[in-house]
Length: 385
Image 1 (cartoon, helix red, strand yellow):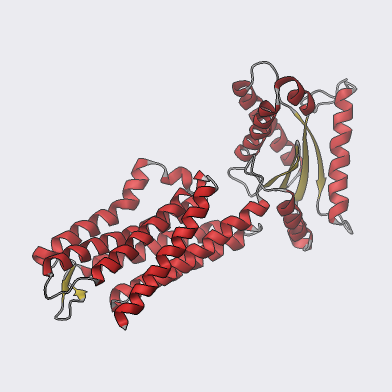
Image 2: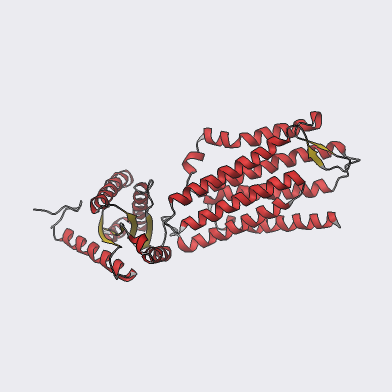
């Protein structure tokens, strides 16, 4: 009965993950490789546990040790894959792509693998009791230590970004990811200590929730530029406008690419798409160390919701963006330039609604565009004398 129940649980986990992996593959989405690695490792662990259950300890003593050594190696690799995915998700991808950081993060997996495969000879990490169940040995504390270490790194990374982006909608997603990371660490520690398989179910639940969040993101992410779309912009602006304290020093910047129709007509839609992505890259670059909310709300129109102590600081941000866009456009396009017109408005205007601030920013942007056409201001936004 016990064997049958374990087999059915592993069978269910394996095929549910198989459905998720197949779904992501059909979407040809390469951005979720870390998530896929977690699925692969958990699927392999389920296969390993099912094979392990088919052998008798009394007759296949050597096979039992080999399978258990491999089990612990995959077990700690699962923690590594999850933490790597969390760090990538919360914005540390530039750090974890460095070889030194990857090696440091992967070191616990190497240590546990070495100790696991040494155990059949000197019981370094585990030994079997009379019932064929692994029991703690002299270096078992290392396993518990690394589980706590991985969970702590993932949770602290989420906590850091939650505090950093506390005024954004993404803060809740980051907090839930941190809670799941902590939950996974506790369940894995408990499973190692009490020799049960509770953590496999916890991992499955976490991966399913993460998969659901990925699909929710697609409702709010612009597929061409990777920025937030109009739906999330409306949702975020509604969140900011709902509180007087959140609106303090907050500005809405409305951006429209100049002569975008001529770029499409004269150079083709693929070049037009590249121009849109170039603008999005410039917006990201000037927002790396800030809490700016970036979105493409349709066509060649973009918005930035940002916090600035003064309007001078806001103007400095726009100047930096124009400079950044000019540099990127020169490297991407040889026969034309990409520029934009902007309109800004403060969100902390008494009795103003969402529609009011959007219309105000749009009017200011349109006014600047008209003044450019009439030659009253330069492309940089300076008033001509």
